[in-house]
Length: 100
View 1 (cartoon, one colour):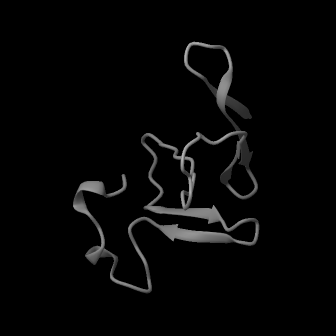
View 2 (view 1 turned 120 degrees about the vertical axis):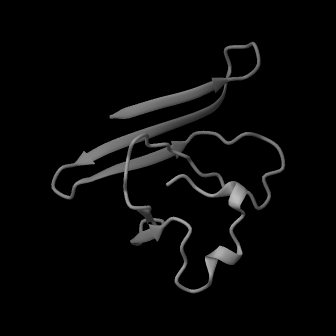
């Protein structure tokens, strides 16, 4: 599946921001893959800013575990609000915890 998103600039028909999301359902590995292509990034001072997509899954239990691609090098296992190399609880703001 391919989804196309765009946002017009003001009251004109000129497209200011565009993104394409390719969704692949792999039945052999039981995974869903999302490839996001950004055709533009909002203007302004973006020095040191990292742009990331955010997805919400309703009524989805993944035991707080997910995998991300490390720039095409390897898949990285991630566990929400957990780090093996330090006590993450000391750094977590309880007002900004991720959804479980």
